[in-house]
Length: 627
Image (cartoon, rainbow, N blue to C red; front, side):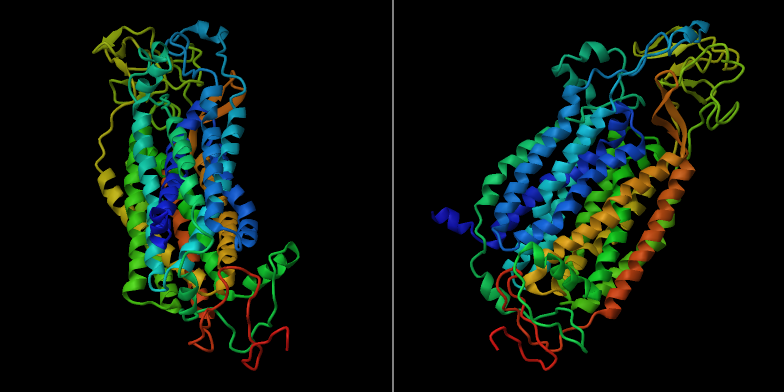
């Protein structure tokens, strides 16, 4: 039909590709990062354990990417992207399953945690047994999500680059990358809204009676939002996109002519030309194809630079919402939306600006590599700005007053308090206490506005001092300044992303582009985006000042209170080191890059396969198997 023929072009594929990228970005870059602190609280996970859930997506991507791109290079690439979309939907469904399979959320007992009483010693609070198993369900869902996006970010990118003229490719790729970052914008905004509107959704499921009179504010540290709604929506959206993706042909009209008119920028060694050989897409030739790329030093250094950048981008973005929540004392939902306000607009602008600079100034490969090195160096120089923070709130036994690092003091030693459930109260002295029990408070003496509990006669407070439920408010005006400076740093970080992709496609033979992108993604995941969240999570755990004590003190749960200064220093040091390493590798890639000996050489190989890779011998003449 004519209407279908009208859609058989690169622009229409870019639209559908971008929609799938937005769905993937919403789920992976937005909702997953938004829900980290919520899942930690709901299932009793540490930051290191939640990091394992996050990186399982990258593990699946890392394992499959080289094989999918090698054997899928000669297949119908849009159809493989469509199959990936279907798998992605299954992964989103599995990721949401723990909400429906887990028992009701327990956040404390009004008697045992709210009162100072010697009888507390005889009542060891039971906890939900077996919640840890749901971490593995989340992990499996992330694995499926990673499997679904392998064709999207490898075969899809190569398909676009093959189908448009050389000067238009940076713009197309910039739009595609920018579209993938609109997804996190949706994820952070919607995820933050959902987390701040917990009760409305639970009323639908019949939980309102359980929670409505106990948790009335998203600022309550025990608050758990309706994190599962986003993944269910992404499941639906990804399944809808399967049909249009599978409808595109193996090769778009005009692709062959576009490829024939291009000038080669493939890296070559001026002293030694590679020998001619014919590689079929078979398992026995797979190592040979890998070695071909490893012998390209510019490609290797460029990949290592991407690994270093990916480490700080993946780790920092995964825990950015948690960083804001801890450093500036915001709720989980608000910090998620603020993190999205930083990451998404700056990342989109960086992608578009990077692609626009290449097209505007007609940059060749050496100039692009210099741009990447310079932007990474600027990010390293700006990293000390991460030390801008509000500091820890005063909490008795942790950051203020009696025995730092010990909640128990003479005023509450007879109360037999427990640390399983965090139920803070704010004293009239401006100091917070872990619970009414640790403040030495008896039963509540009344309410403010019928919702906020008030306590009198608390033994740890001064004479005539009262306490009320909730954390103490702290005045700090540094958050807007931090958001502006962080926006600038993220912009600089992502300026180099699209240029780096363009260089990766230019410096390898056209017949190996899909495979080169796949191999590059493998190392980016293995050395960058997989260790990134784990490294950040481990360092964040090391700054914890108070852990949840579960099952009568025998099991450690999630962290209740972090050291503000320690977390800020951790983010700064990791950012400086990784960006300086990226600067070094971008510079080395520029230094070793050698343009083709014959600049007018055209790229007239068959579309993106490894069946035939014409090379030349040392005399400059083509070798053929028939000679």
